[in-house]
Length: 131
Image 1 (spheres, rainbow, N blue to C red):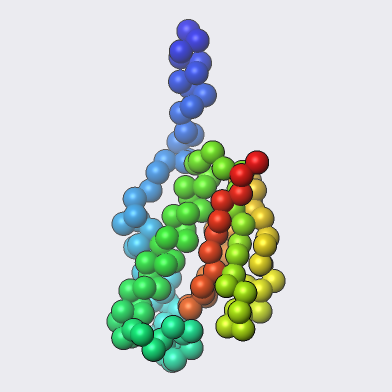
Image 2 (cartoon, rainbow, N blue to C red):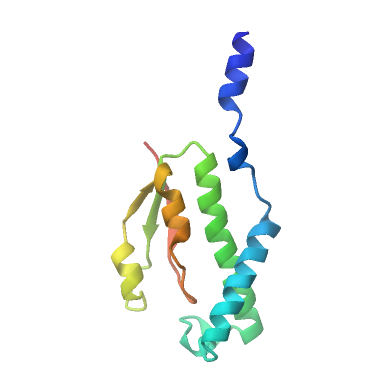
């Protein structure tokens, strides 16, 4: 019976079922499309626009947003304590992201983190926080 108790302890709850990268890409694609529709000049505001075409930048933004969501999702299922928001620390960091610099999100706060918007052109990263 001990093996059964151990196995049940390790089984993830049904709500924490893994999502595929395709799920995150589809969600991010919809979010990015809505943001681009609201700002027809979105491409001109990007901090890295010179090295990419508009289509490449759109694809990059979708992939970046999907990875951001995937990191949050996986952190909730992993062995880490939480995530910390980090910026590039330069003049291109927006005021909203600058306020988040160094903020730590424990596992029970990851839903709050996932609900925060990630703007077009955001260069922030989420790094694991270990106990």
